[in-house]
Amino acid sequence: MLLRLLAVGIVLSIASGAAAQTGIRVPKAGASAPAAGAMAKPPAASAQEVERNRTIDRILKCLAFGLPQDWWRAWVEFADHGQALWNERSIEGRFFYLTDTDRITPRDLKACNAREVGELTYSLNRLLDPDKRRWRTARLEFDREGNFNLTYEYDK
Image (spheres, rainbow, N blue to C red):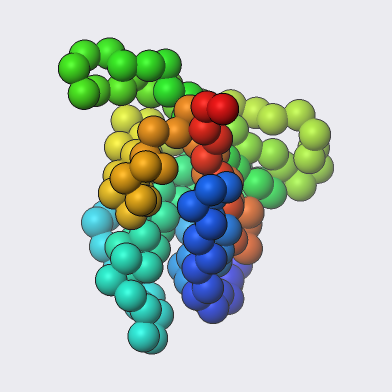
């Protein structure tokens, strides 16, 4: 199945998260693990946008490794369980997907390397303002068109 290359548009709303198209090709479900690498570079994109797109591309490729052919939506949820050691955080990640036929009941997703997905998602923190880096939960959601939605929740 050939997938069209999506136009890149990054909209970042620090308070509530980010929603955008990654400008990547959605890997075929069950594809091999990602290699650090190639992504279509958007014209006139800032260095931050390019870095964000590369990271999102790697995350999606890793998640695609465990997706069935009929996947519809996949997402990763991260919850901060507080400070583990001095200046470290204890974050737990969970991975899910929905299929075309069952768009209600989430199924557990086995990513190629769950730790890598967590580290890559957490690495997006450096693109946030310093006062927005202490989120309580983060959710990174993809659809099969290559769109993603990244949202953060903060303590009140």
